[in-house]
Length: 165
Image (cartoon, rainbow, N blue to C red; front, side, top):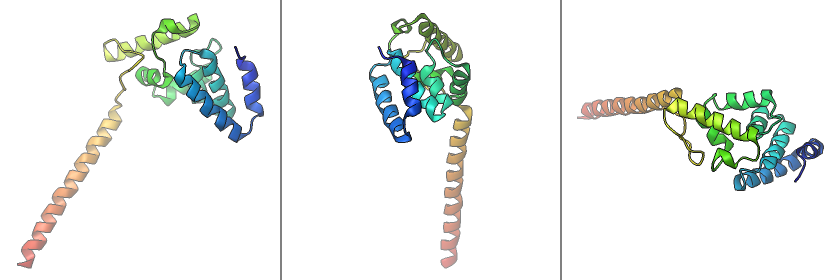
């Protein structure tokens, strides 16, 4: 099994293009094998090297040595919303599939927070997306603006046509 510390050292020495290539490869591997914590830690090391604390926290969330600053940056980036954090982790299966007790406990805790938020059980395979109120408000405002412009346009057009005759 590869040592995440060695991978972190390699990441620091890599060029920006090499980091992008490595990040892309590791993301593909994590998507294919989400329960392999060492792949997540390697991906976190790449993001850490790039200076992206929220993504480092996202991919290192289940590690025993997770950095609290990165974990907090991850939570903040996803609005401290447990459903959004569940989706972002891309975990599949059960908490019991995790390799370590720390990872199992963090997964259980996050899913419990999501359940408490929505009032019913949620699944790792398809967590409900959290609807943010400001997104709904902006969407409604946009629709109302367009409808208002249509009405004003229709009135203006009918007045213009009435003036022609």
